[in-house]
Length: 461
Image (cartoon, rainbow, N blue to C red; front, side, top):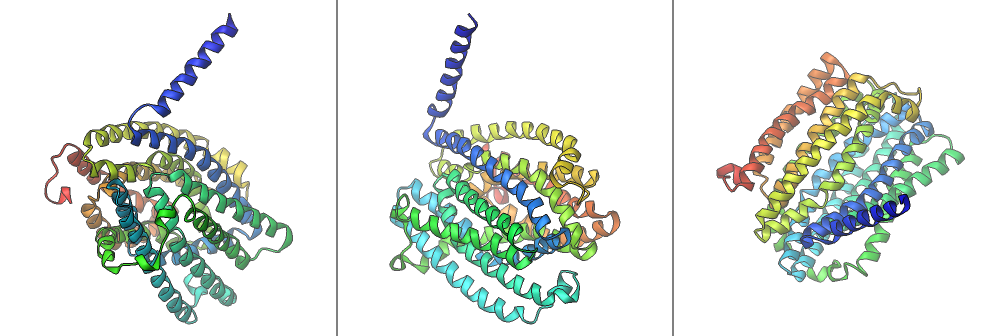
């Protein structure tokens, strides 16, 4: 009797799962399949990222790891020179596909690759010249004896970062085609290769920041080159970049959308990438490690939530182009319900975080509970913003975000500095949290107005 009941239950569960992934609108089915595949891939990526932290710290040391993180944050400012082209391509490519204008999509791809390649060439030439005049030991608050090593390190990080700006366009195209799991798979392979190389380094060399830069920077570039070649010869053959199709008059369309994203991108970098720099200057490089370990733990939850959100940006773009507001409303409402589960998961992770830190990092780095608490709230705010930004970015209603991020550019650094000086490491993330709270309230109102077609003026731009 029990065996019969078990078989009946198994059949029913299988049928429910089959219906879930095969019934509904094509757009919804695609999203569900992407989420399932992404959960598996992202789960592996999270596991690798967690293993990579203690492995890297043991290869160098907490202070050197903090130097590496801070330098990476500074070089990340070079993404300014993307000038929003990546996000502009994402929206324009998705719009062209929705209207079945495949040649136009290829023109956008070709033009974006050309413009960004020109930009990074100029950037690297300028950086190579300027770098010789920079004293990185003072910038990173390290001993003067490290100046020469840090100069070479900064150049390597800049080169790899700039190459990835161009090479990652293939993942932008994949995501715009509503296949984010494929982009996640490419990133996973890059992480596996980097982990393997660093593991080999721990067994064959003494801790060296230059070797670390090559392991973490060069390997993803090689993986992206291989996948770009393969995908542009197969799945995305119709969109392979061509010099003949480069048309700079389409740059205006890319930059019209991308320009606003560019300002948002600047605000995002100021909001996040300045944290490591401020911490290094106020507290020293080792505290950068403390801060980032706490962030990486709670980031694992955010990455899982991002799996649900990742397919929605381009799906919202397609639905809005086809005036399918009912579908947008239904999906948007569901994502806010999922966010409540995310809240409970975050509270659970906060509760057991001291145990996890001890098992994960050991005694090499101490993470204060106060930092974990503020970090958990920050992650909740980040995920809430993610829901609304996926909708607003997908449909191009981002003017309000632009204005908010402009204010952020001028407010965050002095606010984080004052709070950091007055209440310690927690103050740095508290600054980000206060800004995110204001943004979350404003964008929640805007999203509601747009869905219910009551948005006017700035709310509808």
